[in-house]
Length: 239
Image (cartoon, rainbow, N blue to C red; front, side):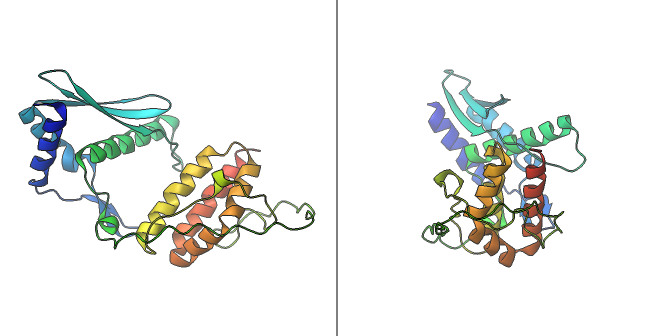
């Protein structure tokens, strides 16, 4: 039996196991799988079918290597590393949080587990709508003074002004207008922020996607406030 056939057999066996999502996100009101909800079941099933899974990390990728213990053939699942931000956390704590999230996502991808309830019950995905791009102005505007300290949830971290649109900063959120859209917007936003190398790129990112941030504010003001705070903190890190 090949490693692919054994992995498929393990997935089918896991489907027959009753598992509960013990993770609770009281902030947005959904449940999710924690590692302890499925890892013991997966390890038991892997032992039965003859598979072994090992997770490893480097500075760029996390990977799950699933090996057939009989013939040594392997399947490797990878995920790009990303930064995390937790108030008051030490660097070693942040690293532990990142590795825990990566392990959870790698195993969920390998075993085809769904993310959480808002995605489980989401309606069919609508057609992708590209965010509107601001029309260029005929003449440059005068440089604006730096904004005063933002009030959480009320003041944008970047003053409105003309910015040249670049495709790499345009965000496209392919999800219905519910909590799944909000979750995806937060994930894409965090990824784009981690890609920025200076404050000007953050400014451009915010202006190019202003319509999406306005939509996020309308759908979930509290999440919008957190996103704005992350933007402000990221911008300050470059000074």
